[in-house]
Image 1 (cartoon, rainbow, N blue to C red):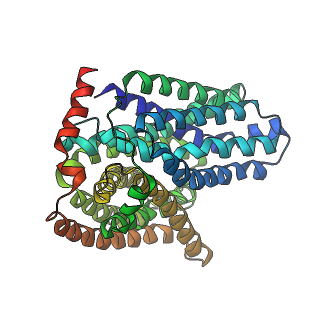
Image 2: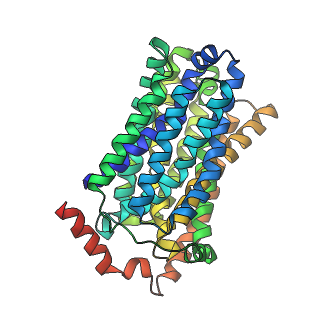
Length: 405
């Protein structure tokens, strides 16, 4: 593995920990700043706002620079935001600090995916992206539980300070290991041309609908396990840790399958997700079966993540591709909102906790149909030259540069 990929993965780990650890520190932050837990909960929404604003804005500003320069700058923003969070004297200051921190999120993953795929030979591009994104899934397995423990035993302020240190380590790794030739500066007009392509919107649609299946279930996994499965609340945390391990394994496996089968791997992931969710809905009251199926679902659904990220960059057919890559990160957030909203709708209608699971299965099937159309469109597009794919000399130079380092 190129060492630059390690730097990207460390950065992804830091960002993932920063995003999700607040959920485990709500009481400690509320006590420390003398506000209600519900008020602190708004920090989650504040972070989401920062992601939505930052992904297109900072990516657009960064197209005139190399990916290495942009990634270092984004990590600098991340460090500043976390330092401000650690030192925040008031609740309002913390809200602003969280928004600043979140600005780097979507753009880092978008630009980082473009850089990651240029660090390796073309037939390993999806694997490179999966290695970077594995840092995000590992954050839920290691970073979030550890951060929650530190907040409970010492101080919540240590956690954003530690995340700032992770950001500094990432910057050092990027400066030392990231080749300058992982992409060249472009311009906003060229990047925007990618959005004229039908295949770009097809892949973005697959992300929004297919991954909404995941969030329709995951958003309500705690009550599903306790109300349907009859498990105590104490079991939820270790089960979620198992889920996180499953997503990490699935992410890495998805990289390998994606390089070999492309969007067909996403079709397989969505079909299998629908089948697993149907089985989950039927066996949700049997604890062992429910847990096994939930973990398998996490692995299978996350396997599609690096594939769609790579495919949207390929579909762009522009020299950079950072903007469409960041747009796919936005599509993941849309999927989160759509899945959670549809799950809430069926629960509000009184259909019970199996209803979100069936909604997830339906969304997975809908995503399958859209992905099949995308596969057919991709076949037609391969008949015309693709500047991203045919630029072998540039790709080989960049790979050679990594090998020398």
